[in-house]
Length: 312
Image (tube, rainbow, N blue to C red; front, top):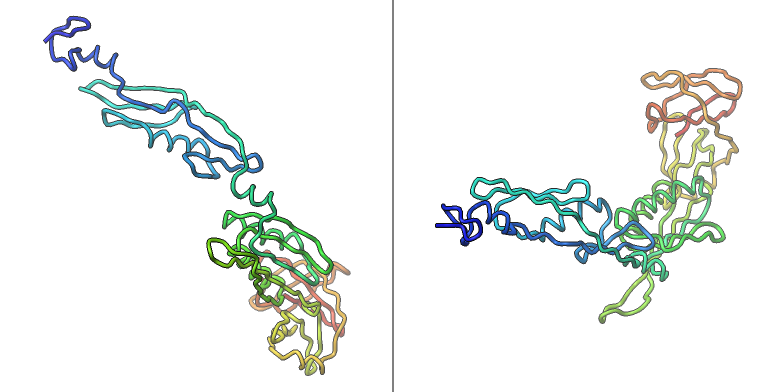
């Protein structure tokens, strides 16, 4: 058999010798370009009809790999913006390099479109004394990000803050964590807002009330307690480590005590005690170690009737 291209005698492939066949044959069909739509507002991008966030070039590589057509077994990878395919045919190494073309488009992703339109599925209402608004913000943002949702609006209102959330599940989890963190009371309600595909659509409202009593000190049964949480029952933490649960009416016989907390420096940790230095006068004291205290955490102290106590 002779090659119809160069006349070389030997085994042929479609009338061509091995070398001429390799020169003429296209072993790999690689997409000439990848169409990517970028969101105008955030870092989302759509590729192959799916909106994503993360490693753009990794997703481009995966897209190209899935759309390559090859006549031989091969390996494929990206390097410096090029797609490289490598395999072998009749013992000959076949290698193709091709620049990756990107066709760019821009529009709003579905989430940003909903957010821009003021869409929300739930509202988190936080009312009462909020020691750290930043902490509440971080809780909401974390749960929203985990559900790949968004905060449609944050609004300061009389007595607190409202968060308008695009996803009910994110709102529910965030509200529960805020309630636990602030030692508040949580109530949930739903309201009918419309119909879709014959189904009723409800919007949830999570109301968290932070009682002003939380963090206050009371004297009950001749013992000093700090109010840790205020719900159906009140949880009291004694300065001596005692924990007491009482009903709200039980506080009627308590004496409310005005005490200011201040931060102290831990200079030594014992098994059940802490050696602390009071920054007010640089005196040192040995106090009971609060059950929730961990090494490295700051410690707050109070002074009552001439004695120093550590509080959680």
